[in-house]
Image (cartoon, rainbow, N blue to C red; front, side, top):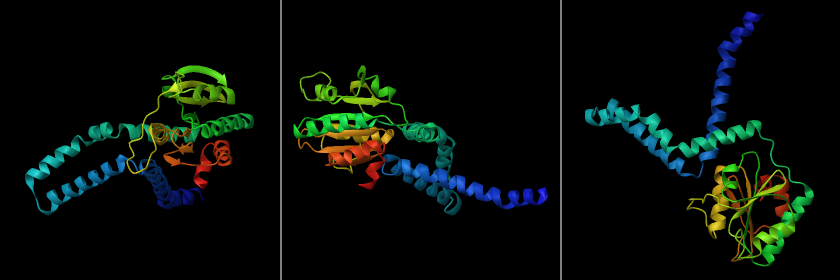
Length: 256
């Protein structure tokens, strides 16, 4: 009986597992790099691979084949350098999905954040609020001023409603129901296919492209409220929709 099971496993099940695991890995990688510059780089690699096969095995171009063959010897190092950001993001997202549990903002704090955003929107005052999920944001909190304060509408308004305040132009980062830091610097998105309204929106989208943080933006020009999550930016959302997005750790954006 055990020999039969072992035979079935060795002949069929192990192959199915191989296919399923590889399919899952490729699917997750495609989702992460979709819409980024890595897509164009991969297309370039596939073109060089095809050119190598044609030059070596079809038309027998010796010089071109020699150059391309030597290129592939160093390809691992080249790819590691070129894709260092994408590789880091893939590993971080895999780790966060295995060990992370997601942020859980208290209902009272959700109300405070939403009311502050609503006030800033009505006053046409810009703001940038980041809520950490599974992936840590220590690299970005260290660029700002440490606060470690309880979330409150009054504190958020005191930071963003005064344009002359030293922390007004940076981002507030919330970790574990605390305003950990303010005046933080975020990476800007280089996505040229998305129409962005300004630096705050580029920063919001930029951070969402490399982490699973939820980023809330209020535009100084229009007063519109926007939210970015996992490389997706939705603008001109209502306060009720914002509360839903915060309570679902950003996944509420998928339903927009």
